[in-house]
Length: 380
Image 1 (cartoon, one colour):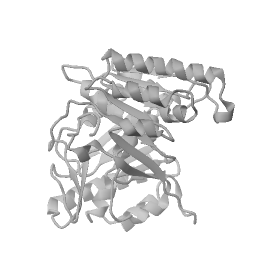
Image 2 (cartoon, helix red, strand yellow):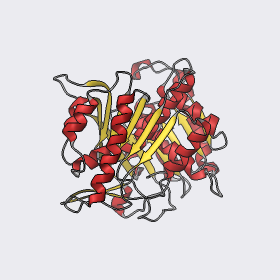
Image 3 (tube, one colour):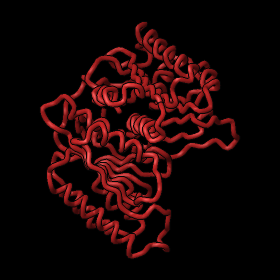
Image 4 (tube, helix red, strand yellow):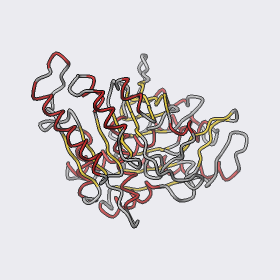
């Protein structure tokens, strides 16, 4: 996700080159009942891996998943297997817990033992200094179920190495964790009650962090599905308002190209500049239209099983594209094609009503508000 800045003129997106790297790691918390939390964690993993490709140093990632034991398949499993196959030296993966859903009244000694086992791995990883990013997927419900002490977790997170990024996901983050978090993004579902939605259209919007990262996670899930099914599950990642160079997902997506050349296509459009309402230039309209022509052809072709339309929402909100026309094209998508649309906007485009899944990322806390710089591989 790039920096979004709201002004009276509308929404602007700061490009990858207009910023300084920060060295201090932050604690990120993604919670809420909306979709996108684990996907956002996968997106951070992909971006972080991008830093270790073609560089003199490695950005090593630990992905620790609580409450996701063996015996059940999860959407992320194939994506993680694909990442481990493509980048075995950059990612470690640990799963703990049992596969069934359960509540506080069903907690057993085994559940507590599994949670402790996972937390022992987490504590060792955090203290080791070996990792640049540690993802604690579904840690929040573990704490909510009373399987671990929130105070103990808080103390460990507070004492992390200065440069380490920690990503915590799951519903019901306890107050103790939110207190030490530098970023808190809540995923809230927005649902229509009058029908009219189309299966396979997902929208991620709102002012909180996690929109583009969730979309990248969704792309990884799609790639993993294709590998698991031993057939082509082709993915197109199309990005608006992201001209120029310097985005870490570019390197990661290129590496995926090398490992899975028949599964991933990537296109970006836009100037390498912030676009404000009332200050649009002719090239902004041309680039936006070029992107949508590619998207429309891809949707109609049926060649892609997953199409990511990253930052389409602000392109429409800035009146670079016609939301009504886009809605008409989306209604004609093949049934087995998934379309993921991201981006912040002030006015809901017409196609929002078509989304069968709509998650709004609500920003409760963000380190950028304290003047902390963004970081390649985590924020964009």
